[in-house]
Image (cartoon, rainbow, N blue to C red; front, top):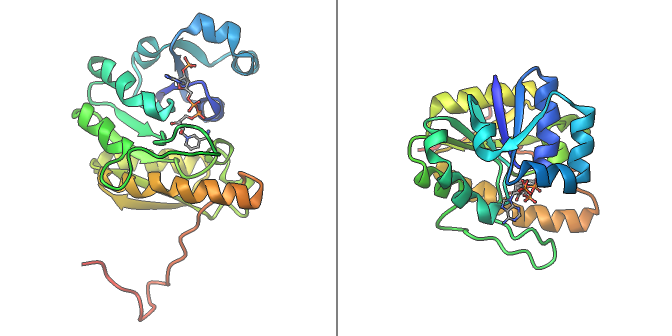
Length: 229
Ligand SMILES: NC(=O)c1ccc[n+]([C@@H]2O[C@H](COP(=O)([O-])OP(=O)(O)OC[C@H]3O[C@@H](n4cnc5c(N)ncnc54)[C@H](OP(=O)(O)O)[C@@H]3O)[C@@H](O)[C@H]2O)c1
């Protein structure tokens, strides 16, 4: 597949080479490719190591993409994606963004409770198929779940399109994920986005970002298993 990763931060830098290694064609979108190439040394090193990754403007990166990854700074992503609405058309957007000001000390999550970035992106772009996922772990863990325990921790999915969730599920399996929990429609992004509050406190308590959330549930035959009405 052709995958456009919008974002040159930790998430973009983790996902782009991982997807390239899985034989996808990968372009990475940035505000100003020249500026990023000259000023972002970490990204320049990545391009040297993986010459197959193409760095381009957001609009250029999107051209011909089957899947678009939203790895943009949360507070800015809805506006940026809205400006690209014609080019995005009905594509699948894997939305990894967090409603977070980026500061571990003094973290502010916005929106929360009654809205989420996943929903805001979906509302701004009614034709695209947003699938919220991979937003509940550190970037290095997203592409290598086996870096934590035995890779049996959970990754969540939220989205309104069953087809899009199926496509994203296949991609998650190929990245090494095995416990993929479909939470339901895009409104369930609220839950996974708010998990960031817990993630930040665990990060501070454990002193590492190498951990994952695992949902342990009863075996199907367990008489205490409840069916959700
Ligand atoms: N880092 C993690 O481990 C992690 C884990 C889970 C979720 N997330 C979420 O995933 C997304 C990407 O995270 P990240 O850490 O890779 O990168 P980030 O620093 O949150 O975002 C960097 C990207 O956002 C773009 N951007 C656009 N407008 C911006 C603005 N006003 N201020 C800052 N950046 C702007 C930057 O463009 P240029 O390329 O032009 O600089 C860059 O490509 C975020 O929403 C984050 O909350 C991150």
